[in-house]
Image 1 (spheres, rainbow, N blue to C red):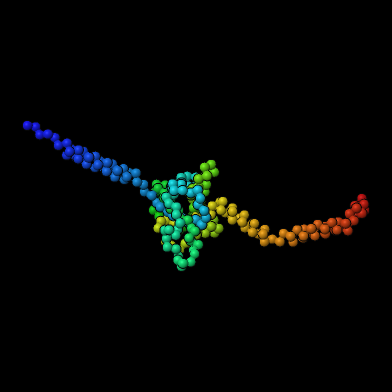
Image 2: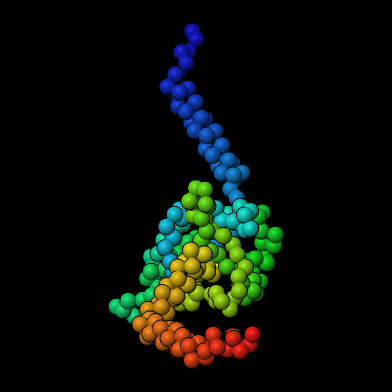
Length: 220
């Protein structure tokens, strides 16, 4: 007499086999899709409004990587100084980004402290930029005057490669305008105007005393 098949055992076997197949696909697929990424971090002492996770990191308009994390420095590191006293570092914004290793010509050199330090000494910086059409903010790699934009002073050891930032164009322009307005406020405009009026009066008197009409007649 033929034995009846055990459908329960067959079902369990099919489910287990399917689960193993799915797990293998997930593991192998993750290995295939995983990129070799180089992580870096930078800090801003200004608003990063418009910048979001996933925003591009560009070098001369060429996409290099993406923004991975945006937070405050105080949430990631113990700030130097007395914890009971306000620190300027509390307002610093920390941005973590990643760049695929294939987008870096010399990955080993980039990871080298000496190579990165030399690049920073030559003005290697990150800055906030904005797309004129979409208004989306992104990170832009720049080479600037290192004397005008020295690296930001920090009091902790970064967990990733540290690339200093420099103020955005908008922030630099705002600071320049603020300085001009401050200088104008310091000027004694009333005294300046009185001096100008005095110069005009003196000039008119000098012209009158010179008897220009008489001199003209004599010249003729």
